[in-house]
Image 1 (cartoon, rainbow, N blue to C red):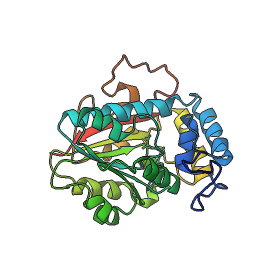
Image 2: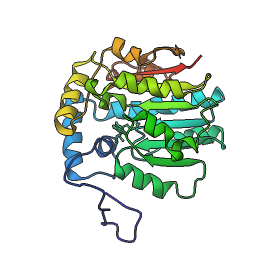
Image 3: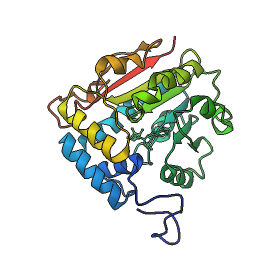
Image 4: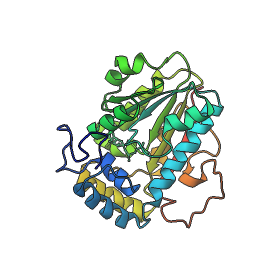
Length: 269
Ligand SMILES: C[S@@+](CC[C@H](N)C(=O)[O-])C[C@H]1O[C@@H](n2cnc3c(N)ncnc32)[C@H](O)[C@@H]1O
């Protein structure tokens, strides 16, 4: 773990290094540095279950990039990225601001590691902010001044749910939560979602690892994932495997990790 501080070994007291965290495990799978031994142990187990050498996580990041680029090209210039994760390469604000330098982004995550890193990284960026909050309480999150004062919900917003809703368990009302966010969006807004799909044994095995090690990992069927888009119009090519969503190159279903998750983008009419 590295911190942009005088002492590189200093770990802020908010960070619990004895328990693995979703954000840090994902960072470890992506080959990042912002993780501890407990996270790397779960990451190794998850990668073994998925049998993809972390390729699914990289495909997931790439799908996020293409979806953000698509939304900016449709005229969306503000984004709410829920469960944004630790900063890595090609984050939402970097992709959006490459095309539209005026784009605004609010990152939300409930992991203090993400918040502290994001704050440090974005200190000089007036168009992007990071909020420490739990996405399972949408009314409080949407009412928070850091969100409602930063984004104009009277205009289209790009709602990003990249690999986060499979960390919301069935008993936590994931459909009600996503509906609250959809209701807050103005017509012309877009929602992007990637989600572990139960079609592959590797995804099911990974969900078991996440559930056991982190307490949260919920694989869902294609129909169940499709329900998150209710009331919205899916854009082409619909709900598909990660690298089949508006690919830059020919998708390859035999590539490791390519069938772990589904991706969809939809427009609010
Ligand atoms: C698998 S990572 C995905 C990160 C990023 N969206 C991506 O796709 O590259 C899931 C992220 O969601 C966050 N997360 C999980 N449950 C959350 C919750 N209830 N509220 C806020 N963030 C949450 C985790 O801390 C983690 O950073």
